[in-house]
Length: 408
Image (cartoon, rainbow, N blue to C red; front, side, top):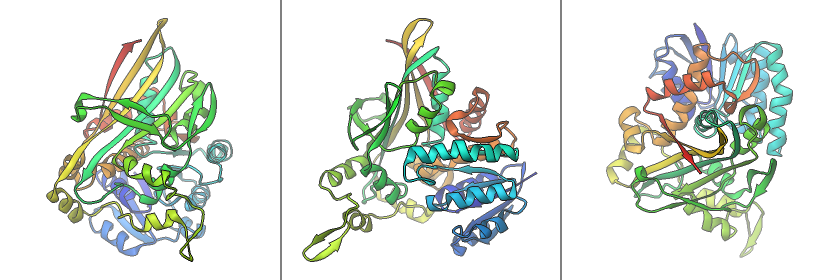
């Protein structure tokens, strides 16, 4: 039986806790956060849970909470990641997070390199597994990309395409953390071109796609977006992605359409400037006026009762390469519940459902001893057996794959 510590009981952490409460191989769930009220509220809903207040900026506080834990699930802000990694090593626990990004170094590539090259050997030395980037993207989309590439003999191009088509009548630009969303929107993106990692302009290199199931009746635009996947795939391109030399992550939807004019007007700048004798940081001013993502059941119901403008989206992987000497594209679509269905199923938003449940499936694999790797891996480094297991679990939640192989 397993003991799991969940650090951070927000949308992602609480979703993992609720799923693990139903997991027969989990005996104890420690719910930990600095917010005691949030901890107490979650614990009151679960049979296997215990609560503890933790200051994640104090490593000793994490170590005390993690005593005897088999796995630490890190749902905390990036500035706490190193403390959690070190605490996991100290108590000899496995480790999982939803996104690593620039947690260890201001340069995103170097931060990931440190995770692989420095923390990988440390976890291997204690016969434990650390897995990073386990939400929906990165996470679920990475497992789906591995599944797509398996159909190729060699791979030239990988495109990860995500369209967020959930829009309420009230102003909700983002269904996840506004600060994370706006930061990603305002940064140059990462891509791989001819085998080399490059930076691309935010909202650059647009492409158009149209899929019947979205019900829009017109193509949508997806543009470059700063995300983990191209960096992880670049590090792992030879072993896990059959030599892919061109890799992009492109994003579109209401949040992008909201952010792009702000970016072009300089309103997502982090540079302080003076306006009518007052010093302001444009990014901070915009952020102050962005409503937080809805997370409470009553609030989500109210939004649904008001009505939605649209409730659609897509997550698509295009893997282009050769199969049996022919040029082909493997097109994999990820299907998952929209906002209305997610609320009906679990009382949460579609973003919470896909990211939280996507992450919880990796936790479920830990609980059922499905990870044989020791060291540190990212979610794009699963074996094909692990990919199959992941999507077997996912199918029971209404998260499925459809793959088409098209000759070019």
